[in-house]
Image 1 (spheres, rainbow, N blue to C red):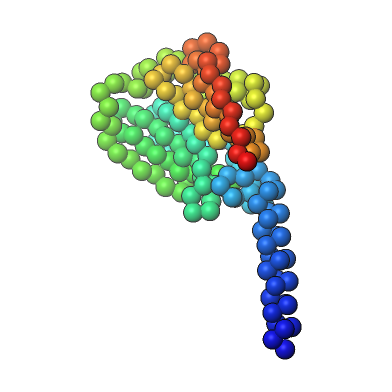
Image 2: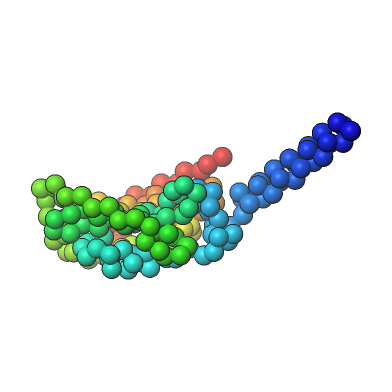
Length: 177
């Protein structure tokens, strides 16, 4: 009797382990959450539109991340007085959390960010033409270039794109083995 229970338990673990393994390598993943099993992710542009409805200002960065097993877009917005983080469910588009804190920077980021010639959308387009992959983060650094992080399977690609002329300044690819 004990042998039958032990054999049944081992078979159950093997089947469960196989199912977990298959789900871990399938679909479009962000930290283990698969878009194919949970639904399609909204685009970064859609996340930006949702965030700007919640807080007016200039979008400084957008990052696709995993929080507590959920794919979340974190959109950083800067207005005249506040830094605002808007967290959005990457599948449903629902605003999950809004955090505001007083802007203590000495520089006027809104004015500089609005003066760049290449938009975030155009920078993403340039990156996706240069490399295959999903953009998981974009950030305007020093109002001179966009830092873009992309994922393509086990590759992590980082690009720096000039915010005024759209030229790729740096390119780095890391392989996860």
